[in-house]
Every structure is written in structure tokens, then in C-alpha cells.
Image (cartoon, rainbow, N blue to C red):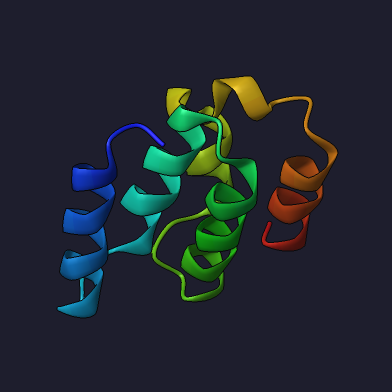
Length: 77
């Protein structure tokens, strides 16, 4: 997996109270769908970010037709 150092740093930041949303974006940009959606759902459930923001975030552009992504955003609208 690319950018493993970046992921490790995000994981450490999250352990210190950082946002899961940025980690989900990093996974999304790498095409790591399972982890991207996992951390996105946690972020949405915690209210770190809103579904409308995610829908317009270019980091998620490749997911606009992904059924799981669409359902997740609908769940947290």
C-alpha cells in the first residue's frame, strides 16, 4: 500500500484525538475502499463531518457511483 508512513501518522493523530475523516480520505484516494468507508462511517456517526460536505469533497470523486458510498451518505443525511 502506498503512503504507509502517512497512514501511520494519521493513525497516531487519531489516537491523540484527531479526525478520522482525514484518514478516510487518504484511504479513498488510494482506492482502499473497505478502509475508506469504514473510517468515513465512524467519522459521520461521530458528527465530525456532514454527508453533504463529503458528497462535494473531491477526495471522494471516484466513489460517486459506488453503491456502498451512496448508501452511507444517505444514512447520515
